[in-house]
Image 1 (cartoon, rainbow, N blue to C red):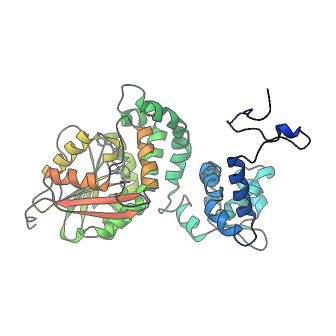
Image 2: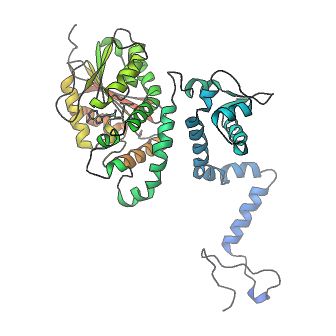
Image 3: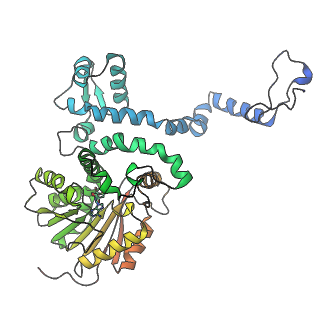
Length: 395
Ligand SMILES: C[S@@+](CC[C@H](N)C(=O)[O-])C[C@H]1O[C@@H](n2cnc3c(N)ncnc32)[C@H](O)[C@@H]1O
């Protein structure tokens, strides 16, 4: 068979090598011509940097290889690197000893954490926390957000291995959703998983709750009920911001002790109490404001409607319902993290998904709520809230 027209794997015609018979030399094929042009543009001294920025493969590679970075950060958080550095800078050998890390890789990993902006290294080579990591990655501080990263490391990282299967079958990857059991009933059977999950939720929700405490008109209300509250990230942030408010966290009974420990650690036991219950069975506790944080996303639309209807019944005229989730925002270019969150909840549950803010507005409106507002909070998360018609009774 002649060389011209012979196809090699990948469907491209093979180029002849120098010294091969002239009859077999491949003409300048269109693909090759394009490749040469691209190479010249990338190599050009003047235009090269710009072309490389626009057309270079680096962004694709970085996105595809982001798991290197994720594993580094998650491993450092699990090992407690920033907690070890809480009292001040340490030389490499001392930090390594405390972490139980091997000298072969420890220095490289610590330098990579410096390059990632999580640590600093001073002139004498000692490692120290940055302001941000001291605040958010030191386990001993109430502002610790590492629970989310620890949860990501122990649970979500592996779960995402099931993405191909989710895309083929629509089925979740979470072991808890494989049997007949309800997701939380299965997850909470393991006390370690229970605590890890609830602390992880606090990690996700604290920055959001901090903004909800500031951006919702709490001043005109006296009481609130946070439904599916987990450790109580929202009740705590709202109560810390508004001393006149009293509230409750409602969740499955097994969550109670974890909630109470967390609320007590802020000295808020007198103003925030735990109410055990199942939001699928029976009415919700009454309050001026009823909130659902990352609760709707785990359920199908019919359940969301059912919960919104129960919330409407639980508030007085003039009362409000708040929903916050990693909702996509129609018309916004950057919904990347909301879409990833949606895939995450599809991997976790049988029927969950992140809705759009528009769909949430419609759902609350259909329930009878009025004056509905949408506020972007932070990262992928937005809140949607609305008011029951009428005036709040005077207390
Ligand atoms: C994804 S977490 C959200 C936690 C918290 N709202 C936040 O935003 O961080 C969902 C919460 O709903 C609670 N939950 C799930 N099913 C429930 C049910 N049937 N009744 C009451 N709480 C439930 C879970 O225990 C969990 O704390």
